[in-house]
Image (tube, rainbow, N blue to C red; front, top):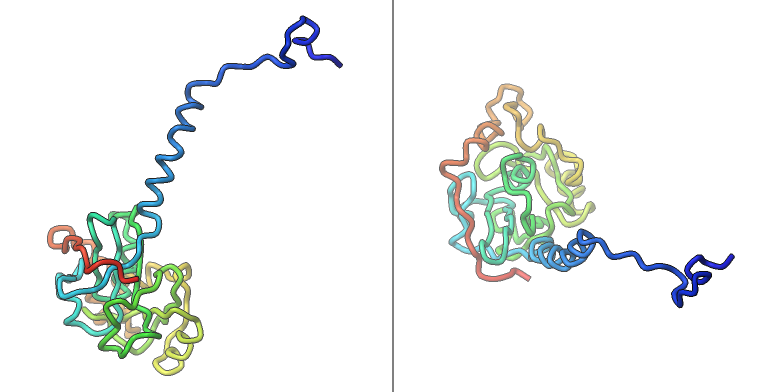
Length: 218
């Protein structure tokens, strides 16, 4: 069947429709959106220094034992620091905290020199880590810690020694991380939940501001 335009003697087989303005605008915006995502989607971790102060506790991270964490906001703003892996994951669960950060990292305790020295550059993606929940260890500022590892095998070995169960980031629940006012150590009397969700939600007035570390850790 011959197209109508050809029958009418038009050299074009099909009539071209004008490109709609909104389509042009959308196409022009795509590169800008991609640039914005590249800026914040995967920023590398920063080196922990003596200037790193816990967002919720206001304490120098190097004064405390156990795994640490950081949330990289942007190259210009630096990072929020956390005195425990538990606080780091809690940040990602709290509705009033920033959601468009560029990276969420925790210490890889499989590569740590010791529990007291997790290392200033020993970071793994918090969402790819394996966590031991319910182990017989305490977070830096009280309450039960969730201990991060870069591999399931390392996490399982720690759990055999210290107790607890291995979970992925996606399997962690607010009850396990935030405490919800219950005893995270399992005693049931609330004595181990001094650093629970309610305490974290009151951080706004005294929370530490982001700081720029000593450059990228990798």
